Amino acid sequence: MTPLWQLDASALGQAYRAGDTTPFQVVQAHLERLGQVQPALQAMAWVDAEGALQAAAASSARWRDGTPVSALDGVPITVKDNIPVAGMPCRWGSRLFADHVPVQDESPVARLRAGGAVILGKTAVPEFTLQGYTQSPLTGTTRNPWDLALTPGGSSGGAVAALAAGVGALAIGTDGGGSIRRPAGFTGLFGFKPGLGVVPREGGLPEVLPDMEVIGLIARSARDLPLVMTLLAGSPAVDWTTEVATPPALRIAYWPDVAGSPVDPRVSEVCDAAADQWRALGASVAAVDAPMEIQAFNQRAWPVISTTGLAAVLKDCTNLDALTPALADMLCAGRSWRGTDLFEAQARVRALRGALDAVFRDFDLLITPTSAAMPWPATMPCPDTIDGQTVDGRGHAVFTAFANAAGLPAVAVPAGWAAHLPVGLQLVGPRGSDARLLALAALWERSLPARPWPMLAIEPAQLHQRPIECQSP
Image 1 (cartoon, rainbow, N blue to C red):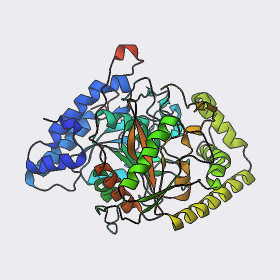
Image 2 (cartoon, rainbow, N blue to C red):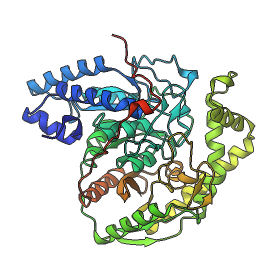
Image 3 (cartoon, rainbow, N blue to C red):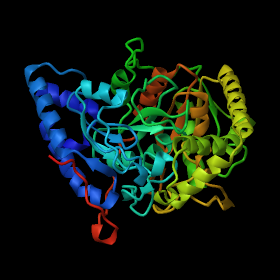
Image 4 (cartoon, helix red, strand yellow):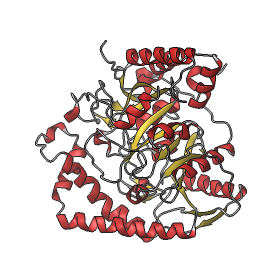
């Protein structure tokens, strides 16, 4: 039989309805799996075993009585550690928030909890979720289950590492510049960044990336994404369960690079093959140049927006020693920009939005790699070269932040493999196409071979370990 921790949310719902298992048994299996993989992965920032088992027992009673409150009732999930969950630490990967324990859920978490989802705990993040790998002074280094020497990416690195290894059937995260999509690509998962405003948020942490960061989700199967969005979005006006076949006239733009920026040849090979697969599915795919506004945003607007956002959040911070050196440097950079610099960055965002509107007048869908790089060593913040060319700290991330700036929906899907490592493909749609984008992700999934599981070569004694932290009874 398939281990309970390997079942996706859809399969769990079927098993609960049939009486083949209970949420309590499933959560027990996930907690046992967590204990097996956490020492090697360091994916979790906090575990609430007691609370999860209590919620699972209540869900088991509802299923027994035939009164589940949603399709996710009894499904175990994890929540990224920059999203408030009542009674659990929300530390944002920083010593400055080490003692922060929210008293209420952020509104999307409240909607999931009302739907019966069982929260296992919080997943690890880099400090203030502003780096492309996952390491913090509170949780150590998070590792990729496909290769423990490598990073799962960031900032949702803990979320994807846990989910890919079988901890939780779903993961809830945030995406302000690719923080869901790039890690999902590095771990063979589906990662959805909804369009701006699709998932309403109240009661969250201060905004570092205003009008860019959204709450989204990560799943092992595309069919689970609409189930979660039905609860997360909180709007009955959208039918998230619509299925589509690829229309013969579907027009797809494929960006193999951004303004000639380097891309790992292994990534290019896999994504070129994925473009051919879309053609085989009946779509028209044209490899075209990305608008120059994308590169201008990446190089001249993102550094201003991201660092001034940090400076705004930490405007009263004087204890720079509590920050890691990298974040202290970002804070100082953010404080050094002039108001005119931010004004010019915002103008570049407006130009980018206009350029993307033009793209979607000619095409129905945009596809790109999720990352220009393959996963790099777990303790390195970013790769310093790609395909033999020197790159800056965002060289690996050129394909993702534009969708945040433009408020567009985007989803990472598995594209294929380079040796033993997954490679991700990004699908981007025009504003308002969120549900259709998920339907296309499900269509794409049907063309993929069965998903393998990482064979974790767990040797905890060889890694720097931290114990799993649990909420006190």
